[in-house]
Amino acid sequence: MPSVISLPDCDLPTRSASGFLLKYIAPRLGPIHLYSMSASRIPFIAASSFADIIIGVGHGTNDSFSGYDERLIMSVGNYQPNSIKGKVIRLISCQTALVLGPDLVDKGCKSYWGFLDDVVWVADSDFAKNPWDDPIAAKFLMPMVDGLNFLLDGNSISQSLSVERQSYQKMIDDDPDLLSRSLLKFNLVNDIILGDQKAVVSKRPEIPFLISPPPLITPLESVYES
Image 1 (cartoon, one colour):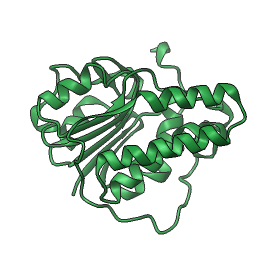
Image 2 (cartoon, helix red, strand yellow; image 1 turned 180 degrees about the horizontal axis):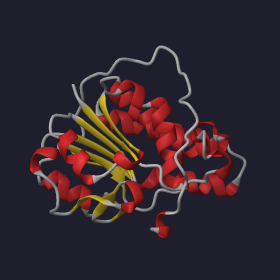
Image 3 (tube, helix red, strand yellow; image 1 turned 30 degrees about the horizontal axis):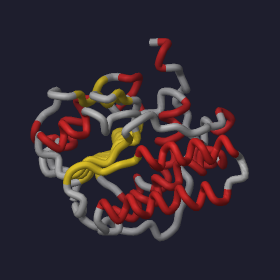
């Protein structure tokens, strides 16, 4: 079954989150990966029509989701019906579960998995070329990886959220740093599912072994410079 994963890398936050999904999630999906500058509206619309799951990293507001260079991909009332109808959508993006998520479900999205508030974590710019090796960011992003992998194993979206929350809680319990624990708790309580709580997607093949992607060579530019 086709899938869509949108992974912009134009600034440190998007490169950090996209890097973890590029290593741990993208190898299970195919055939369309909207990576870097291809994470934009037109390729997204073209690719999403036949997918059962859409996964996206990008900056968000309560009613919009963006791709590379903060270029709009979806906003309330501004998307093609066949790009969302009947699909499971997971966005790692600030605030999109407030207005955009409910609107997507109202317009036919089967389940929306996203965040009610900002998504927060700490990333080290020294790992800009290999963000998946960032041990600080891993504390915040690996719970999301764990939840997505459980969903791709054929389990329900609500079970997958439970796995993600358990992973967050383990990180909280094991972390001696008060700030990190607070940020992890913030993500945990704002991470929700809207729509069908029992939705599943086609099971994807497991990754038999993990090989890190090659170092990222695209320039790391601030989205505010454009």
